[in-house]
Figure 1: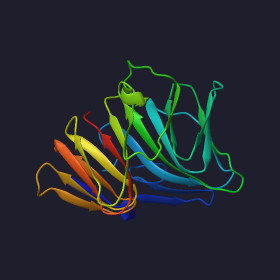
Figure 2 (figure 1 turned 90 degrees about the horizontal axis):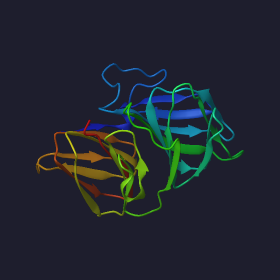
Figure 3 (figure 1 turned 45 degrees about the vertical axis):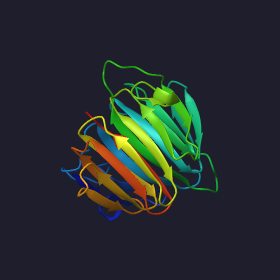
Figure 4 (figure 1 turned 135 degrees about the vertical axis):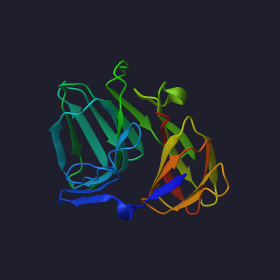
Length: 234
């Protein structure tokens, strides 16, 4: 099964300093049927106004992945650790109990646009507190994985996150690790095909798709495409 979650169906917020689109329940947006998907708790695209900040807050035990699409952000924790992340880079925060985290748009005149994911973290795993990776423009990058394969960010969960940057007409095939995955179009249009030729779903910019009980997945770009595939066996 491949079932779309269109950008128009997502929760939205506009607070002036912050504009956001929420795939799952988050903040003021609540849908009891959309509390996450497997270990994926949060998938947001947010725009912070120039100079805007998220003030320090604590998190449940999750890995927080931030992919910067425009601008430059700084992430700080209450232990004195910090990282700067520019467009084309991603950072992973392995959140800790009783530690607070803040986010700042470092530009005084440009907005910050980024994707943010929260993934449940296994209680017995500990990783570096802050990790960072350059995404670049290669057609396929393993962005994060449980064991840091291929110099990817290392997660505290059995999840594989792929970043795609395809030209129109290009395709990428995947063998999934388990029964669930989620596909998110960041920019561009694509077709997602399951192992059964009848299982096909079209996505436009900002759309996502729940993938269930598909052993393989083929993504075909109909326009230049930037996308994330989140392979969620648990």
